[in-house]
Amino acid sequence: MWVRLPPSAHMIAVSDLKNGTTFFHSGKPYQVVKYEHIKLGRGGATVRITARNLESGGIEQKTFGSDAKVEEVNTFKKNFQFLYKDDRSCVFMDPKTFEQTEIPAKLLGDAVNFIKEGEIIGVLFWEDRPLSFELPPKVILKVIECDVGVKGDSATNIYKSAILENGMKIKVPLFINAGDLIKINTKNGEYVERVK
Image 1 (spheres, rainbow, N blue to C red):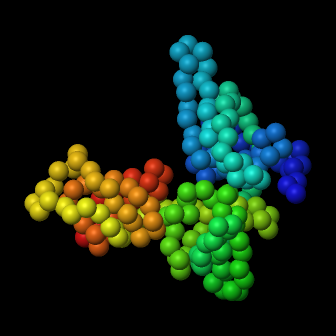
Image 2: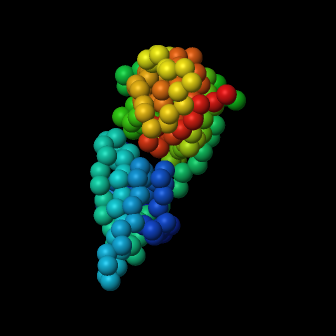
């Protein structure tokens, strides 16, 4: 059961929200997935937030006036080792105490595709409840399968399908081959560059 913060809770302007920020709205905890500031001609501006409901895992759209405020959810980060995932949850372990903690998979969404077993990652907690984890802006993954590239072809505007070590399917340039390490943008899941 989520407990609403007391009235003395810290308020944060919606214009200060950014990806990953957690906040309360209408008595429910949310985490920002996407933030858009929309200017409306002569009038004011609005802030459109795509947020994950931290109770249900569902994604919701919220629109606020640019001067609106929401209650901040005070979170803290602890480094945990990612052990494994199953259909229901992702399991992390505190490398100091060996205590394990689970985060329901529905709260993490596609972000779980970007972490590898054994990797140390910052897990965000609210009180004693794990909410999510912090992803780096880019990760390096190995290409497991893709069509054969054309030798000497360095065209960057023509793409082919590839399957990565985490099972993700993405588009990569023609010169990428199976076995290559590539950098992926974790915000949009797109190819950035080949890693030498």
